[in-house]
Image (cartoon, rainbow, N blue to C red; front, top):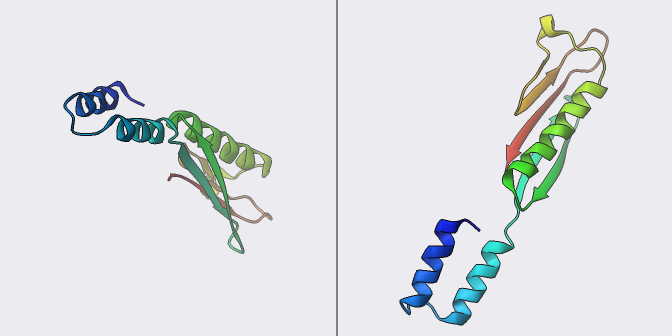
Length: 108
């Protein structure tokens, strides 16, 4: 939980705006929050998803990005002249005599 939220929550408890019990429930809910990043990919015939969770948003996104880049790299030899690219939030694989594939990374 960020320091700003902690101090605001503590002030609410101190000022009597929330009870100690309410404070504890809200604090727990904020501490338990997980962030999710999803990789969606399609080869034009099917759509697949993978969800990555972590208490740290950057770690969730990094895990999703690593998986997306691994799948792109494992796909074969991309043809960049035909439009293949590997980005931070999307990839597109195009190669001669191989199915094209598109990946998108979305924070949810």
